[in-house]
Length: 263
Image 1 (cartoon, rainbow, N blue to C red):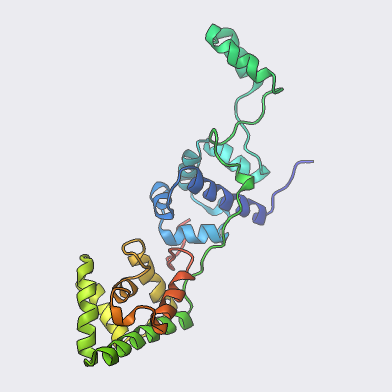
Image 2 (spheres, helix red, strand yellow):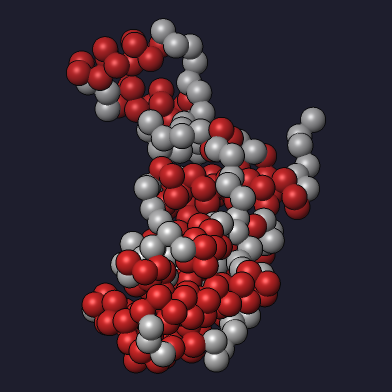
């Protein structure tokens, strides 16, 4: 009896195919977004299993199929059946042998015959089996409490630096500011954000901190410019507030934002 896929089954296969595209092509999530013409927020929704592939635009499915090396129909068939099916028939192969196969092809054909009849074509030669890939849990973003703790610990670091150096908070900030400027690529708005957080004048929400992490992701040694700068300051190395900030950062699973899904 032909399996009738439930929305959950189709969605799970959709998620698996996205992971296949990431792994087989050695892509980052942002690179896959570029290929599919979607935002990182949309990809996050896809990877969470929040979107049925039948609600995804045909152009996006077509681009995903191209990344997997299969046709759009083959990929849609996989979502329905759980199997990648080739559109190539045995008659096609027989016709090719009669009309096109030369002597150089015969050894390969004979070798293939030892392994039985033709099997379904793999997605990419040598690639991982889609069914064998276990999707990794997708990070949902920072909670408001985590964001509040992040900001509080950042302010604690500045107060500790003030105490250790005998400077005012403003003077302590100048030390942090110097390290931030040494990073070389912070905009004025980004520098102001770092100042507001460290000075304790602004407490970010979970969504705001998540968006900030996405903005800074991959630009520095640490997950954010504040930790990168503070780790270079001798008076703060190994201190508990800084370690707490680093723990919050390290528990994050990846870039996420809250943009609406553009299916």
